Length: 346
Image 1 (tube, rainbow, N blue to C red):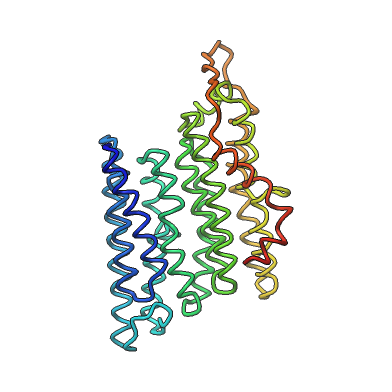
Image 2 (cartoon, helix red, strand yellow):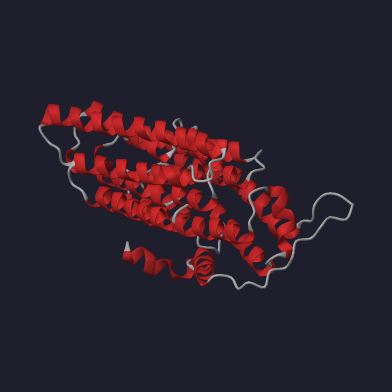
């Protein structure tokens, strides 16, 4: 792709995100979402492969539907209350439609079907944008409207997302699909707490973004997209593969790694709110995700391919690992000791 075109799309992405997260008026938020959608489409379909074109088409159709629902929800609310302010969403029907629209934008169950397919058809760098930056505008809208939304509906969607994200990831061999189901599972954790402590949702999103960036950039460095190629990639950059194991365990939420922090705080807050059955359910469902993270970690560093014939080992690359990946992996694994500082900041 032409570098000038890439620059324009990147600027449009940042501009669309900034417009949505800084707007008070529904029309401005909607315009930002549309700019975002249009800017990411060429990045998804840039390889001109049929699967990439299919992914771009699926992404466009779902995002256009979700944007139309956001517009319809805000217009219904304005019709009944005369308010275009995002925080003044009070009409029950508007709240229900907006919940569905944002769930579709994010890829929450039951509107999750598009996300694994789109991620599988995209390059790793575009997949990283789809998993992190494209989630920020809907999360910020959810944050601003959280007092008006139905907590029971959000909790049910969250439990279903954690369950389905875990179950569907178990049988996958494509790493991008595994990461897509991992994202759906993480969104469940973010959604369950948003009605009670929205700041915890943002903290969870920021830490999830850190860990996902570390994983995607590592996979992009060692050029791996399937479990079978991940098994032989340990000879390329052994140290990076060893750190990938720790980042995967952090994403699973194991102590003493960074990923344990949001899960710990969310379970603590749910217990304070007398939602012990919900806290227990989502904790148990996260064990499903733990299984496929362990599988990825096992393939990355601990196992050899399961056959006795000689396989071709890949060349050890002497190219230095990027400083950004080193910083991201350090933050993805070592932030738990500074959790008191993080909690005071939020």
